[in-house]
Image (cartoon, rainbow, N blue to C red; front, top):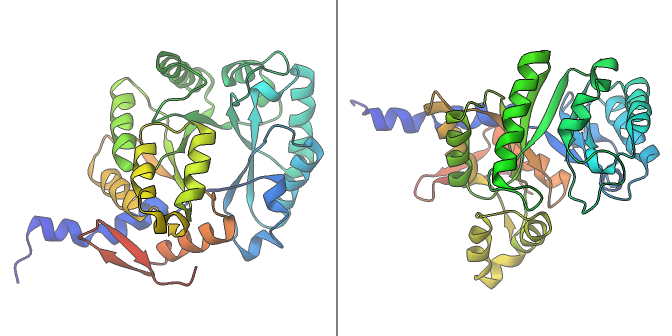
Amino acid sequence: MLMTATTLAEDTIGEEISTLMDDFTAETTPFSAGKIGHFGEVLRSGTTVFVAFLPGTDYADFIAVSKRLRDEGMRPVPHIVARSVPDKAVLDENLRQLVSEAGIDEVLIIGGAVDQPVGTFSDSMQIMETGLLDKHGINRIGVAGHPEGSPDITDDGIRQALAWKNGFAERTGAELYVVTQFCFEAEPIIAWDKAIQAEGNRLPIRIGVPGLATIKTLLNYAKACGVGQSMNFLKRQARNVPKLVMASAPDKQIVELARYQARDPKCGITGVHMYPLGGLKKTAKWAYAVLDEKYDMNREANGFKVNVDL
């Protein structure tokens, strides 16, 4: 039988999904880490795990979780939250401890969603300008991306910051990449990526994807984090009351992003970051089922359903 170009393209979707998901990263906090007996029982060896620093976090616990992840076979990437750092001396000591005690060689720097900075830093660029990352041998740096904008910075401010970070990478040789806030639909992500590539972005992008969680849980996180236009997607889903307590998976979003990554040569997306909003265990189990191709495609719904018990 002669296969059309469309059929051939559709037959590659499994490979495209695997490519997008291949090196997915995950996330934890000191509190949620306490619910995990051993990270090696949940995640495969060598998985990159971001350690979120939330307001009120004890820094000793933060360092301890980073060290634990390293000891249990993971690659910890701690958050450095600019507005939660008192001053340069504290930043210097914090980085020293992370490197010496947890073997850190990579960080994610964000501004932080707090109304007032606790000290002298108000944005990630000020952290990078201190020269302390280079002093402590940290050359790989994640920075924040906002496909749907942010309540903490204007759209113009976001554009200027991304341009500055591209320039910083060029003049210093630092290995910068973007990790975005979670979004619920592929369409605004794709539009954003095309826009920033046209404006000159050259930093690779890891798209934030919500892990397995109920619609009710996703709505609560979206409201708390100020997620933008794809919030309408959740509101539409929430109109079906029984769906509020059913687990929602980002299968349709993954399919559309995988197609875009594979078929648009200008695409800046290199992978995904899974936000375990419904718990790390369920999110990891779902992600590995996708990687292992334990799913059935639903071409009519433009998604898939994994064949594992979650």
